[in-house]
Structure formats: structure tokens, C-alpha cells
Length: 44
Image 1: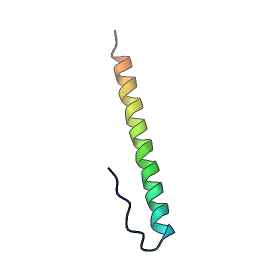
Image 2: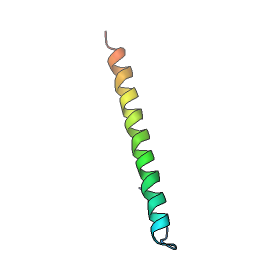
Image 3: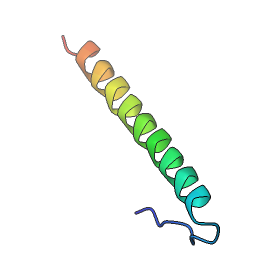
Image 4: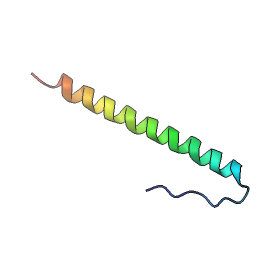
């Protein structure tokens, strides 16, 4: 799904990639939570 950027300057890119991946994971978790809340609230 995600491809790592070419490691031209070694660690710097890797750190950025890890940071971005963590942010994406958090966003996905937030979305899942809000969807769960909505479906929970819409129950009779």
C-alpha cells in the first residue's frame, strides 16, 4: 500500500516516512472510531 521513499540521505527520509505512517494510522483509527460511533448512535 505504502512504498518507502528512496533512502538517499539515510535516516532522515526513514524518520519522515515513519512519522507519516504513524499519522496515517492515527487518521484511519479516528475514522474507524467515528464510523463506529455513528452506527452505534443510529441503532434504535
